[in-house]
Image (cartoon, rainbow, N blue to C red; front, top):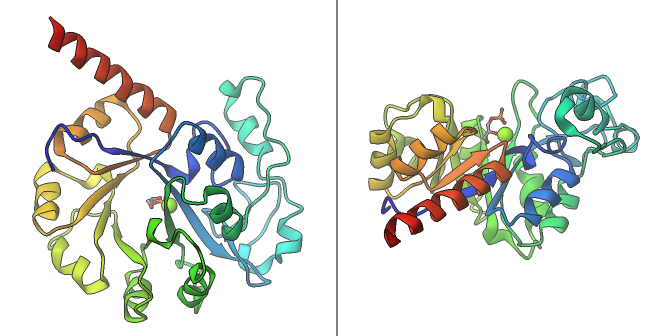
Length: 263
Ligand code: G3P
Ligand code: MG
């Protein structure tokens, strides 16, 4: 990728620096500023629905207690997934997200409706959700914007199973280590994308992935220093908790480049 190509803006967990993570309000705010992509995490609740929440427990991001797999969606709906964020992030100003809910994956798909691509990260460790890949395939079977979905998981066995089902969904190789042979691993699970941890990445690994035909979307890149590195390295997508900050950073960078070109 040429170095002047700007890495896409991808809101990690919907952009958790400016709204409670993995909620409809977070996804909506990021869509409003025109992000290219959204990353979200999926677990399965006791009544079988795929829900958007990072942890296997509801404790950290709601006023409830317990494992997602033991709570029905009727019960999950009654939890407040917004107040904790306001309490934790004191710079949230007057904004109060009390009353935000843990959403269904279906609700996020409907909200996004093709306005951005979505990285659906299936959580399948340490709690295993047998058959979750089949349920995702079924849920996406009549989704109009299937071409804007990238599925990933730290559970590569799950991704291998997804590949074997030939569902026509794009897959990303998700990993938090600098891999020995990224091309080989990606091929094994049928991935066209590599989603590495930025803290375990180096420029030559990005180049190696590009040579193998992979696109590289790295997480979680939150500071101007790291955004500059990501752009210098030719990373394709910046998965960030701060999509608004990254957008402002890019705009400022463009203004500086234009001013330099004129002088
Ligand atoms: O999918 C990228 C990133 O979200 C992986 O880590 O723990 O934030 O889901 P985590
Ligand atoms: Mg994630």
